Length: 266
Image (cartoon, rainbow, N blue to C red; front, side):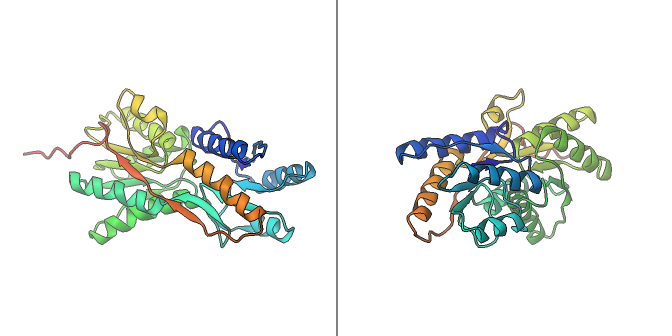
């Protein structure tokens, strides 16, 4: 399996599902980091193939699918997990729906001055989550301020600083993963505002950290372990010569103290 960084709790949990399902299917698994860099992706794929693997699970797909097309041209069996790209079989969360769930929650709370920390534009996860959110607001006649960022706390912090500078009257921010959301919480605090009160904050993936933060984080729960399990099972079907359909798993919004109703001045 290839992932951007196994230090990412989300990817580690997905890999646990891959490993568990591999053991049940009599397959040994190993994982390598690519840091989301195409040159590293190609090098790690070559290394995996030099070890005569049966197939690959790629958790680092880019939307342009250039590297994926190269792998397919070599006749290597593979599936995607977490992200999707082009026509290749994948197991993902319905990230567009997840973004929509956050937008509906914010709208129900009365938030109309909102921003999105949208993640990296090359990843389907960030694009779909932010699109689901933005499209829902546009249907309500409201434009959303959006900024891309790295999928980590520092990226989230820097993006939130930008959003707050551009729109000091912002009352809610959606970050497309929990780590970026943690950075958003810090930026809101550093701006002299109260997270969860002056500015509502929501994340994505509902990692174990989300519920345990000093201010518990509202987050979209995606079935990470199941995603990994199903990806391995999808790969097994490819290895058997089948042509499986991609799977999209359902998200669930978990509401906590970081998102509260908008307090209007009387």
